[in-house]
Image 1 (cartoon, rainbow, N blue to C red):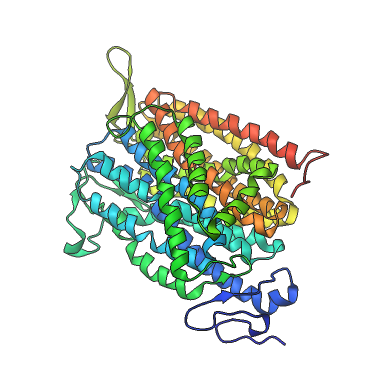
Image 2 (image 1 turned 30 degrees about the vertical axis):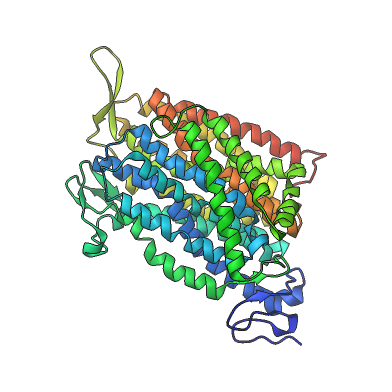
Length: 556
């Protein structure tokens, strides 16, 4: 008979880690109903509920440049709109690249070790961002460096999802992954609400530095913050230190390593070395790609974004393979087997539709709203449209920017739950069709607004259509991950989840660049029309692989 100690460790199923050093579980059988009900369920949900806030903070640190850049514009930082869009994009590409090694970390270093260390790592970019934001006169590259470093938060998603996937039986994976990702995705919304608030407060007194004065109206969830208001923009970074320290402690003392998943993680110090080594190496392809892509004086401006992304991905994989040593080399080689399966590639495309859209729009939307609706678009004497005149009737951007990501995160668990009932691919098909129509519609509205002296009249339609896009992408996030959990076995599902999330996360790089470039060209609608074409292609792909009569796997 199984007995359970006070900490929830089942002695009857050979679970070690009851000593002070820690929580290594030797035997894990979630598909065994008796084991699951007597022991596994309690441990799995404990790890899930600690994982959620850790992932939430990762998303917050990763995505915060989308809000910071709006406030930098309001405070008169000496950078162009295009340069501010690159800050958001740099955080995006770094986070996506970090997900590539992160998708393998659980099997190399263990769940508890990985989630603890990657959560604690967020302290550095959070604190560093607070430092640079106190120096308006510092060069652009210092802000770009902090945006790059914040990519650590983006990488955490892949390891978090890979970890939670290993704890739950297949019948509950859609719901469990939906809860972890959906509630974790609330980090975007949390950040968009918290940062404008903490900027209004002298949160740390004299230790937190002095304030700047708003040159343009800003706002937060409850409305406008008038120009002339003191603003502590550095709190956008410093505030997360207050949550990351206790959260790191909670991860260490409350989570578990599954030895059935990671038999050779070694001592925690060894595990930490593996994680740090691979995460450090992940910065190399990001820096290389950005240096070749970004215009002078930061970079060389030699390649396009569409070359920079595959270069970044291939370089990251090559570095991982070459840099692995000892037992790591064999484990990495085993995980590379996912690339031989066609479903890895089809589901990667489908996850770009869903999560790529969610995170890309989350990153790009606040600044896009500011430059489209915060300006009156009027022609000069020569009839050439100008986009520099301040719009006195502009909506309060930061009072609305959080709504779309909030909706997308809120419905993600619902997407997983519905998919557990009716099948993931049918849900993905429906939301893809919705996204095609909504993208075309929002593109048309953006075109109208960007040619109007009173763009605010188009704002309700713009916001409503983007909420539809976020809703559909959120449901699709849950359905796609459910499909992965059904198609792949337990040893491969984790790395596939991590890989697909890594590639989809490049949406955080693509969307700010594409939307920013098209706004600069005076044709913002083309960005949304392009996204609609991609969604339509993936709708056909989903039907071919999973819904047609002779589909490879029928509606998984």
